[in-house]
Image 1 (cartoon, helix red, strand yellow):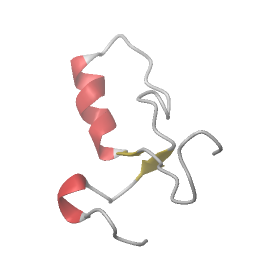
Image 2: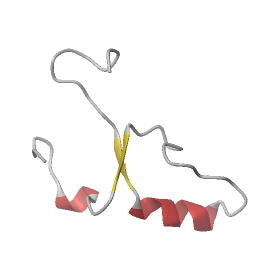
Image 3: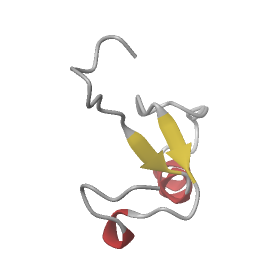
Length: 56
């Protein structure tokens, strides 16, 4: 991950749970993991349950 900044590198995590929404909206489109540009696809880690600075 050499292109995301200095010592505190950024990563883009996207919840697996949101893929179902997009599969309903885009039924004819293949949606492989990483489709939305995320570095990590998480399970059980939703936006309303975590905060900037949380350590996992």
